[in-house]
Image (cartoon, rainbow, N blue to C red):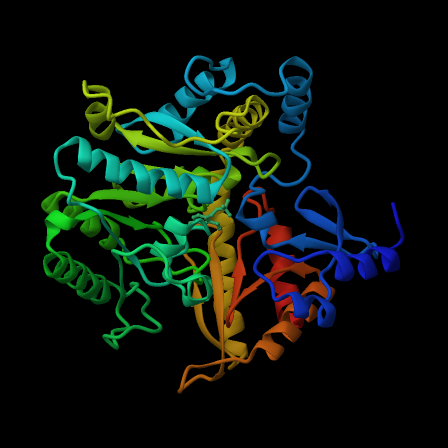
Length: 446
Ligand code: PLP
């Protein structure tokens, strides 16, 4: 491997990084990660840290998952690629669809459609929602509703339903007909309501009001993350997602559960929809489906939605979406091995236990440091600290200070992620009690 200084200098000279300002890369060069083992990563200077980011919410089983690595290697030898566009398929995608249905998806999800990642899955789900309504003779249902603070990837449809201005404004105009309602975010919301249950009721009323205002017969779908993730880890009250389900059913909207983060154990259940006891119409997955070792995704489709496409005799039910890498046999092999390990290790229970440990530890840190305005968690290994410069005024801490905290935490032994004024924790689900203690110790030192 080239030496550290060579790599750092060339990185700054040749690369632009996703979700980063190019100029920032010169001032704050990224850590060059060269190794991963268990739940730890090693940078080019030889510094080892617990990866409290879990790759990017995806390396649920850690970096040493031999069955997944072996499955990828075996599949590369047997069939490294073939498409599953009409006319061909492969054995792996068939096995995988059964596993997804039988074990991970909420009841009633009957079909799988494969993609190459989360943004693709969102794009496909939003398109299928429109096509579904057209097939049923409701071509006027073209609008999309979503939550402010929601993150749905970076394709144009996904960015249009995205609820964070940072991912939108530079690319506007985006898709017309996308409307956003306030998130059930007790720390900051337009209703000044801090009680999660009452807030859930207010947001549900606002959603119903928006549906009526827009005219239900013009709306295709409501898309939401069961727990808002990239927007700052905001778990809603348990009444919220069931309430959205009810409204969708009442007004004929499809409910899309964007489970790119929440599927496969992260919330302490096998999916976020299961966690809240909800059956969505469409469900997007990606990320941890292959433990992050191969780009891959799947959209799960309910029996009711599938039936409308499958019973179509006009030809208009043909799916005009798909990717060269949809159903990639190596990705599907990685996914089968990942899901077998995910089930065998029952990682959802460990996610719940370690999540509780971290949540209690973060609350103890909040007692100690006035800079911690809000602590969020309690639903598996998705947690956040919201940092403020003044607790009473809830003024978000500045970028430079949170950057300093991040650096110091890294030096003290934990890689954390910063999003705005939030520190986000999404470690691998195989985290041990000692690893969780290391993360808390590093945050304390940072
Ligand atoms: N949807 C959600 C809820 C996500 O969190 C993400 C990524 O973080 C995406 C979609 C986009 O996924 P990808 O980055 O794989 O395109």
